Length: 408
Image (tube, rainbow, N blue to C red; front, top):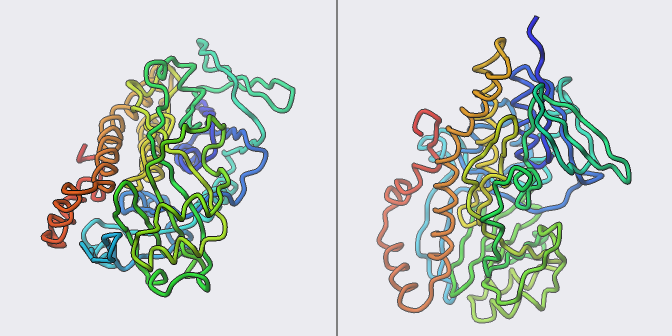
């Protein structure tokens, strides 16, 4: 009887949870280690483009996700200073027809809840919280992992280790893959808020994703939880040095810090920003994709391998793609796993994903520069957008949204 492989995944974010499900369904036993003592409802909305929702459908999770998610009817791009519409891309059924899956928006906590409940239903998955990975060593029979729980060190033995532990990945550092390209402050900050529908301007309640483009800043918003809230993300250039906080995702921020950035914007944008009672600040760091994603029996996934700026809203989507590729790599080796086959599976995973994710990182950087143009460059950008047909807009997104592994 073939040995059941044991995988340890460091990090129980969206990528780590999705990878655990994929590996369990490939016949492996999986231990998820999460440093936080509880996985709570922190966070805000995220966009799930068709390349992500298609994977979630293949995992059999889309129907459950749709109980919480919304399907925007359109993407509307506007000029910040005067509310001039620059472009409108119809989504809804067209997304299914064009890219084979829906374009969705969902609260991060709702997506995470579906993934966690799915993990709980898989007997092969064990989730252990309050455990921080502190180191590991590759031995002839596998990987020995050290984790800290309170003041106590725990040792866990596995056949291989996946580092899904985020931007400041300890696994990446211990592999020596992050020495030359540490996270770099991008000079931009994202501010996130949830505005109750009753407090939001009526225009913000439309079932669409709105993108406002201004000088050195942009604003994205869309309804969440079937219209209960409006998710607001304001990204602005910021000269202050960024904190070196461990949790960069949700630093409390005062409304007075945000409102001056949008003082000269169109009334609907100003009113929406003013309606937010609580803001969370997220300093944006940039980092090159890892030159290698694995060494021996240790590999990276998600932000640990390819952290990206949020201008294409692809961070979660690329982690979900990673998880699917990892599952495929081990499914292909099912029933015939030896030490060499583990390396072959991890190598196949790296080969499938590295170029694709790296291209999305670069595209996200370029998109940020386009969003924040000013002066003559912004005027030229606006003219190009206004002259584009809907089909031309979709053509530019095909490489990203209509993705299958065979096209790599």
